[in-house]
Image (cartoon, rainbow, N blue to C red; front, side, top):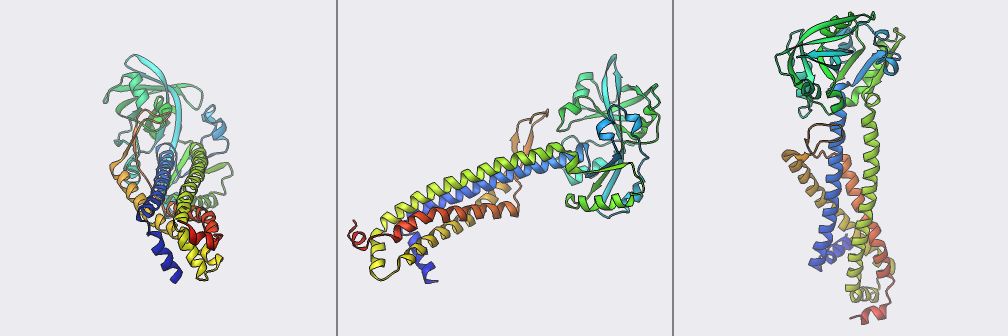
Length: 405
């Protein structure tokens, strides 16, 4: 305890250098927390966008649909889900909807272009998404009409469409013939995937079933309350439908390959950032510590003359480095969290990402893991930075140190 008290007094003997050391550490920790929190927010937004815009926490389809379903949609139909039965499997399941994907041509005001229709039960789903993920792009409320559809923004602009106007959807049926249905445009939507928006039509599933001449679907889309419970719920669903041999089950991380690759990319980028931050802290703080040792040469000589062992001198300077690390971590974490909270409240304007039509406001999502990791980096860096100055201090010649001016 006496050693720590002595070290603490020594730290602020030169107030200017002490402030510079602390400010450097606080800035480094705050930058690291802010950078990791920004990437954490982007990953969460990417994950939630993949789940709630086009995917689900769990998707059930016929084996082979993912590989060949686009070419042979009629061959990979399954029975519509028993929604209540699936919900009863686990209380975490909060929404179940069928999905039928049909492609064809859409005619509007003399213009005919290709489309891909996503037929589902959207009533209630949009409200759920707005409640669970209010920041998500492209969520518009559906009416309860079987004939009302929403067009992706790209398709809406291509057709120069207007809300309230009729259009005609044409496509092949499951029997190979052609069919057509009339629908009414109620709105347009946008999503993070501009390519899909240029072809997509969201429609009530009954409308597209009438077009395709079927009462079946291509997928069951299942949503859970807590994304961390996905794998547990998935196992229970598999067990409940184990008697149906031709079903394939996928969780959100298997469906959204873009998210998985983004996590890998960001992980490598953050790894490089952490290494660079450690190097910067070590070089900067080691330089300050060396200057501190030079200024205290006479003091070190006096301590040695009073009988302090060289090992004790080394320990005192290492303790000083660690104490700087502790203070830097504490104040750096505080500043970092304040930056994150302000950034999230104010919003960070971002330009459109590749594949998007619109910019968005980003935030900073800090977690306990980010805080702990940043603090440990600070402590590790100051410990390493203190070793060489501490060793040099402990190896001082008593006579030369006392004569130092």
